[in-house]
Image (cartoon, rainbow, N blue to C red; front, side, top):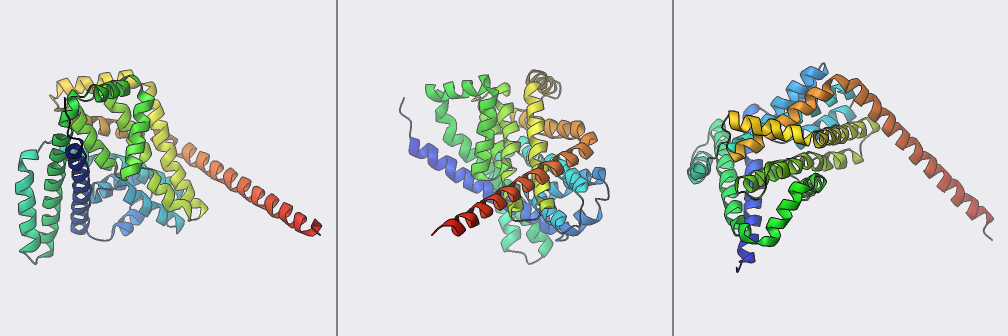
Length: 340
């Protein structure tokens, strides 16, 4: 069978670009509609970790970026406006809030994508009212998301008949570790966990992957999304670095736990899929939500232990770095003194 690789690549890249732009547009509309005082709300309403979880869910659902919320949290901790325990609660909530996009995709509004784009454009270009403009951004973003997914699905459909691609998809189902790595790498490359989940929903709906192969990719997505936070904390103080370390630790521990319990977790998702008559896209969205909610429930009682662990971890690393730097400088100065 002859496959037009140019068409597949162009559809995928064009669809991915439109998806990322649409996510940003929708997030901008939601953020502006909600107001520009997100840092204030995060600071004011997070007096304890439980409230932090709630704030993380709401704010992430509004701006459609768990990374954005976590980066804001890093800044607040760096400025000593939040404690590490409060920040951990926000991070947990942000992981839950980011599932909103996957649930929107699960509603399968693809056939209404173009009308939504048109309606959003009308609100953006033919009204001067700020609220109407924000509604336009939201509608355009939602329509763009579904149109982008249609492009990606149409482009990838010929791969169904390619034996090598089928074999690779089967390998993902048989090797969960490989699935986690694939999910993490894809998310690191495109820097958007929502896009990875959207692609995964299309692969599962198209029959490219079974559920047991799709779930590890979903878990890896949560690890890949921590890279931006690590970069944001790289030049910040030790408190901010601890927040980034918490984000990584929280997602890695959740992934390890779900991989150990992959069989029971898959069975639970299949049970609810049959009970609630979930579509393939909504099944992945439900899995995404179940993973992040269960991860938060399991680790929430151990927030104190998590804070203690990252505090000691970063402290030890900082001491080792300082000792190595001191030793290097001492050796260098000794060589200079001894040199003729």
